[in-house]
Image 1 (cartoon, rainbow, N blue to C red):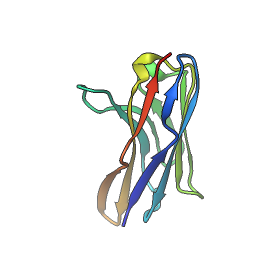
Image 2: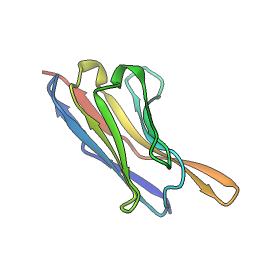
Image 3: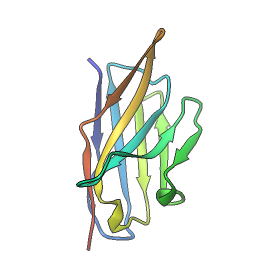
Length: 118
């Protein structure tokens, strides 16, 4: 059974930092992984993606503030959030796209709440 489990969310003051972690079990990363977020009343949107060969892409408003990384040996994905802003408040979801021979499957974690507030 494939599971993605996020951790590290919580309350942080504006300008502060958080590090989100995503632990995968039952699967080995072999394609894109990333982080998405969803604020109340909003659509889920991409925050950051890291490819299997380590290339990264970011949503415009987090570029320069957030850093995505991946440890393939540990099957972990991370999101370092710096210089946080109130508008970063959302539930953050870990995502993985995984190939099984010629089939591709997409997996999501259960989400972790990030609240940026003073």
